[in-house]
Length: 163
Image (tube, rainbow, N blue to C red):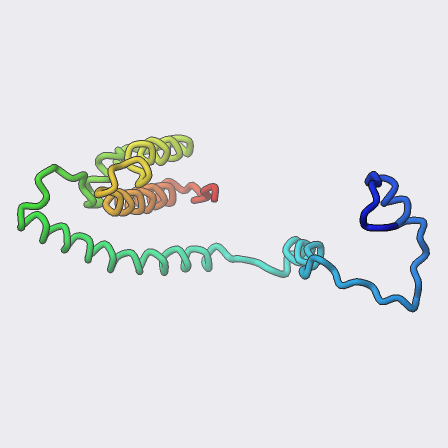
């Protein structure tokens, strides 16, 4: 089996299955360093678990870091407003204003929360706004997602979102 020969894949497989393995030849190292089947077996075995409490704690811990960024953003926004640099009316980042915009005061069904999230993202996602409004849009999306998740919890629905 030379390297410069033109052979089809089936004949290469036939040679591999028919060729006897020599005991004196060392096997080449595997090209994949991770045994994916054993990793998959371990994940599906049930020995690795992520408790809902742990996931909630991680979510809350991540949200704590955003509060400082939100406070800095708001103080920077106030400074810009005082200097007169912000002439256009900016969308609010206040949670009460976003909740009113979402209409979360009315009881919703499970499908309504998904529709609310998608329609809010369609109008406010950072990729869909002007570059100078992207940071504000990111904060609005985070606040809206947090409010929708809290409303789902209050409605007794699980908070499962697609990654």
